[in-house]
Length: 220
Image (cartoon, rainbow, N blue to C red; front, side, top):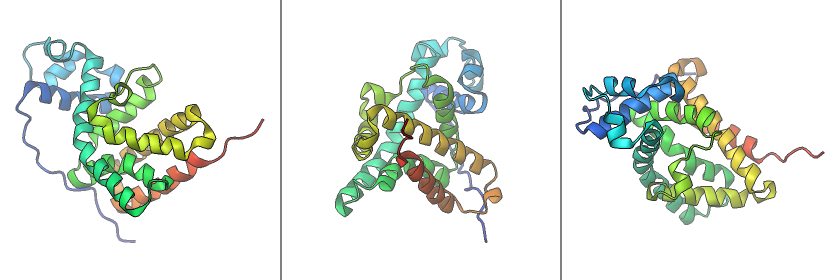
């Protein structure tokens, strides 16, 4: 089967604002080293900031910077989620489990497929693995305007999974989310290994996630 190599990485102009440069470098380092493996000094050096207290000045602390990474990216992803929600309303698919998962995850994958950006998914995977279980909040937890479409899709998904109950449904969403993010990271490291184009990979992953999140829990 003919395969396609990883998306060509577009040359992105250097972020001009200090705050944006810190966000982008933190996202990259968090994804590569894990959130606990990154110091504020490392982020400042990567962002070429001579002032060692730049992170504290702009974000308060490292978790404030992590939150800002999420806000920065979710604002970029929201228009595509809004468009998918509108498509779902128009085509009557907002009760379709696979389509709801597509709303949640396709914008993230499109950032890689169209722009070659994998750092956000790596960062998000690190967060789910270590910091989400500790109770570190994501903008969706605080009702951030940047997550309005995301929260609408999550509410629709919870209703669709009502047989599981809200607690199990939410936990399973985190589990399939981790599955998706880790899978995308693995795929991006060597697309030829999978024998699939990026779009084939995403569709295959979406099928697996749909089955995984919907299976009824064991009794007893």
